[in-house]
Length: 281
Image (cartoon, rainbow, N blue to C red; front, top):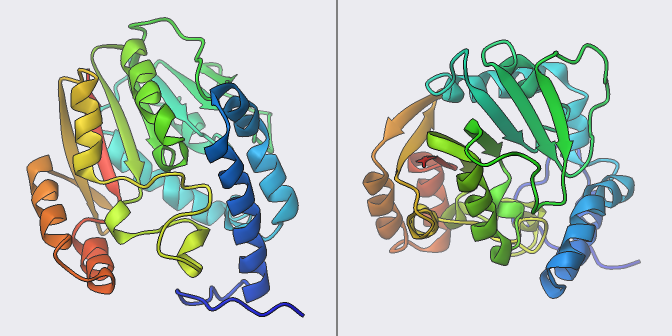
């Protein structure tokens, strides 16, 4: 029998070490392939990677969360609290990675129209779809929307899954489609408190589907280079999203880098949390 790998984080109550090991090995193998191939081949892998993952990891937390309506409703409420400051009844909106589309369907009640953009159709129930909703399945690169046609883009836990060579392309695509004054609101795990994928149980750097975890400083550099006009940061506290000047996060990042790894992760999770930015065209 193969030796059990030593865990670097507490074992979840609903999973075994063997299940974590299997999850880690499956993600690491697919991620390793993604990092080695060119862009056309990556587009093919993007389309199939989650199907393969869920087939080989039936105990994946996302599958369990999908079957927990109370949990998914709580997540949707938290996202709505963040987005409420940007949406209005005349807005055209895009959500990347909508999954079961519950949040997108709820957003349809508050805006003119919503596009859900995903690598595949992951909805379990395709009935009772709002009239002002449309799902777009894309290859991770090319989005069939006109330039200057969307008011708000939103993604949560997406940027870290992009190949580092594709990240600037993603933000450029969004900027091209946004209207003048439009905004891209996105949340992603913070590099200095990671890794945040399945790798956290086994190693110090992400080796699974988080192909790159980011800092505020790195993302601001990308946004500035692509011509975004301005950006705002948000800090989550007791299910609320509080706007904080980005320079505050940049200062905290500099201070965190002075701390050893365990202290950096502890204080970073308390004082920074996930990265949450609103980038304006």
